[in-house]
Each structure stands twice: as structure tokens, then as C-alpha cells.
Length: 307
Image (cartoon, rainbow, N blue to C red; front, top):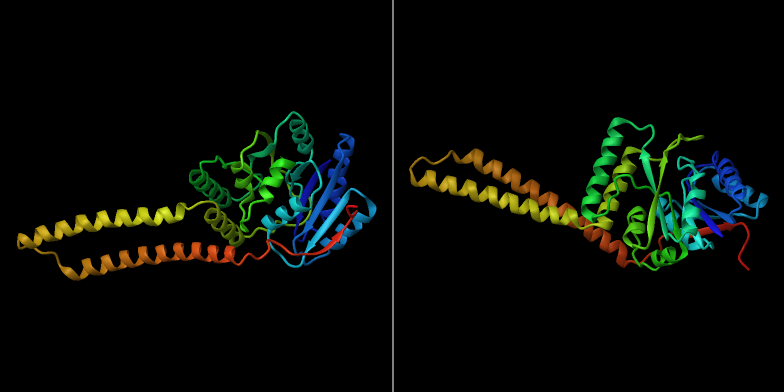
């Protein structure tokens, strides 16, 4: 059986459309399936729509969080509750083309453990958004040595891969990178990002920046290495300036001191504050991990229960 995991946050308009579209495609392809909707603390009627779809079809199940825990937590919850021998993660807004699930499933039948959905384009996005996304994926690709320039959450994973990911004790996941990091035999399927049918994107610029910072720091120590690199650069700069000042002092042609001192203090203070901020952010993440709070809390379930 194939489990299709669908995180949903304020997607009341899309729930019936998504269930009907994906269900129809998989039934036509004669693929046994279940749709696992994960309600990520929605404020609208998303959960009621999921319950309604579960009543209409035994292939639809749903879990509802006690509050909004974020998309990463929703995907991990879906994997934890899925029963299939293979699992697909897909966005509820159908910007990931659901017909590609069949292609992914056939590749899985051929022996691939991970089938990654790779974007051919990012769809209709603003120029700044595209630039920022490109910069983020360039940084994370460099930091992790994994090419993630066109990566997405749209992917199929074998049960063995899913179980491996679920065994990882860390609470803060970067799902797109973890599925590549674990290894296993993998391949890719290319797709074009589709236009959203109903509703609006839930990603604001603030949430995207937070998402980028969280995922870079949770999957890479590169920012800490950047602090060391900045310290080395500043040390070289200070050494050169110090030698220059000493030579001029010996030659009786000392520089005016006030401007130089102020500039050095400003540069030193800025670097130190940035360094302390980066280190503090990592310490905060360590603090979150050692508390060992659950990744998510499930308040309700709907659909056919396992016997």
C-alpha cells in the first residue's frame, strides 16, 4: 500500500479537491493507497473537511495537532502514522503535480528506495523571492555537500527509509535534506510547479526567513565556521593596520588616533555581537533539544483505525 501524506494548514477549500484528485489518479492507476491528512493547527474548517472526507472514503485518514507545530512536524507526524510500504509527501495545494505520484511509485517498484521530486521551475514567484530562495539553497548545498538547488518536500520513500528517519532522536528536522542524507538507492522525477487552485500561500517573507535560518542551523555548523573565518580575516586586518601604525610611529609620522580607534571599535564590536548572536542561536537549539519535548501533539484522529 502507498501512503500519501498531506500536511494542511488553513486549507479548507483544498481538502475535498485534493482528496478527490489524488484518489482518482491512484484508483485509475490501480495503486492501493491511503491518504493521510495532517491538520497543523488550522484556524478554519480544515479539520471538519478532513473528517467529512474520512466518512466518505475508507482510504482517507486524518490526524489533528493540538496547535500549529509547523510543516516539518506535520510531515514527520504523517510518516509516523502512515501504514504503507512506501510513503509520498505532497503539498495540499496541489502545486506538486499529483500525477507524478504514479511515476514515483513505478520507480519504487523497480527497486528505488527514495524518489526525489526535482523542480524544473519555481512557478510564479517574485524576483526577490526567487533570488532569496536561490541564495538559501546555494548556501545549504555548499554547507551540506548535497545539491539542493531544486529540492522539494515532494518525494517518495520506502518503508525502510521512513523507519530510519523516524529513529533519529533530533527534534528539529530539515526534511528536504534528511531524505538525501540517509542515503539508499535513489533517483529523481522532474516536475513543473503548478498554480494553486484555491486559497493563498501561507508563507510570508518573515516565515520564509525563519524557515531558512532554522534549517541552515539545524543541518549545518557552517554559521559557526563563518564566525571563525570572520575572526581570522579581522585578525589579519588588525595585524596589517598595527604594523602600519607602528612603522609610522617609528618614522615620527604617527596617524591621527581618534578616527582609527573608533573604526576599530565599531568593527570589533560588530563582529563580536554577530558572533555571540550566532553562538547563542546554536545554544538555544541545544536547549530545545535537551528538553526532549515531543515534535508534535496529536489531539484528534479520524478515519479507519488499525485493528
